[in-house]
Image (cartoon, rainbow, N blue to C red):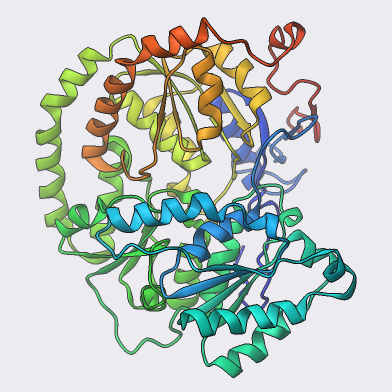
Length: 512
């Protein structure tokens, strides 16, 4: 499906990609269901001649803890340097500013950039504004943002409240853009618009594509590659530097100018297709910047294919092959030692969708057993619709199946049952909310605060060393497990179904 930049409102992931947030079974079964879904709607024939169907989605009985699309806009548009994010919302929607400010400052320090605080402003909508409208507050907040910070762009994040009262945010943004002489970008990210928060990534990237990216660049930089990422350390510059390429990191920690010049780059890559799918596809469709269509750069198979495709697109094949050979030779001795040290260990991955697929690949390169994983959503297809970006199938084809594979939007009540089924020696997480429960079960967690820790060949060794570090402290977690009591009743702890009382949204059997 083509990306539509004529409207200010991004299509949700459910509409574009068929995203689900509830599923449980073997990873190979989910990959097969996704292949059927890509074949068309119910009753349409798939590539293998069988009738296609949608992915069967389980519905949980309640939601115990999650986040929303607006928070993803807060952590992306709010993390653009030389810009301000105005949250048109009640003040409670801005609670994420505290943690995101810490992450932003740490990210700037890790990249060697000047450390500063976020520039975020809330319109602080009240009950009165819900009755009479909040446009006057929004316009005043935008003018205040301009006077205080002199930004090069102002982003506006909508909220459930503004969606309910129907404030005309686009009109306000349009006339203030003319008044202030800088882009004023509305980002429609009301929390109830989508069942999964990843739509918020797309909302930010939609606005950037429409109003920030330079429409008619006067030059093309054939050595520049856009890298869509979060706050991770700079590992891509050394890797791509081996091919004679420069890195333009976007969206988080980028300047407005970094975003504008994305149209001048030779190609676009990402470390996680959940995050990069929309922006990369839009840059190719609207600005002719090729998206690198290859597996993600995790493990030998993924990193080899990723580098070779970058080299093909940028005409650097010989340099890529020489680099690949050197890196294979360099990491093999320590990898052999790590595999021996980790023999018999069992891991569990609980992160975002495509990122989890990459981490499991790295664990299996290390010889670690992986019987289960919890991913926070599943996209049967990415925006490019290119099979080379099917990260789940790449995992299965190159590293084998995952028998206990679960899709769920970070629910604590599910996690206990999942860990009891697999009984891992450690878990890998990106969101710390799941770590305390695992610790109470005697299972230590590796929190990947640096998203790039496991990227590339060195990333395999990095993760192996991290596993050894966390296992060295396992006694602490075992002692904790013996001295704390879980908040769940006995009958609940005896449940084996992570989707207790769940129901399928449609028949699970394949159509004939």
